[in-house]
Image 1 (cartoon, rainbow, N blue to C red):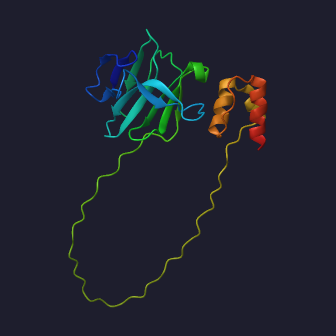
Image 2: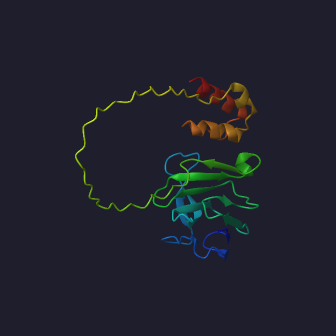
Length: 213
């Protein structure tokens, strides 16, 4: 079921046809929520944001974290009911889908200011799958009649084939084709927070060092 919400920052939702499946979370104080910044982390820095509680068709609940929307800007949210979002004409840098009860980022949407082109959907932990319902066990009375014993033949077990994994590597040639933002993202995915204001040449040299380490 497709839902559509139009958000204009702080606690202003000007249109919501989700029938309660997408709801703006009101802050405990003030007019806007706070959430820990999940990119370029340097300590525990928080950002102003709007947080929406989203209930999926499966019953799973996630939160949509939208960084501060400047005055006059509006964000259109579309959801297919299964955890897939689109944001037509969005002028923000990124939006995150996070867990309902933790700050774990499940999916991140990066827009042209960061991706350098089309919207990039980065799946991190992924949308959780609901736990299966417990199956009620029923007691069954089984009557075993005496039968002549037969020898038990153990089947031969064939060894499982060895599975070889191939690690995806990045070459220096691929690093040279990346933009500054892509080099920063590449280093961040490997646990290194590089300095944003370095030149591309400096970032490229630092990434080459990471590649060789």
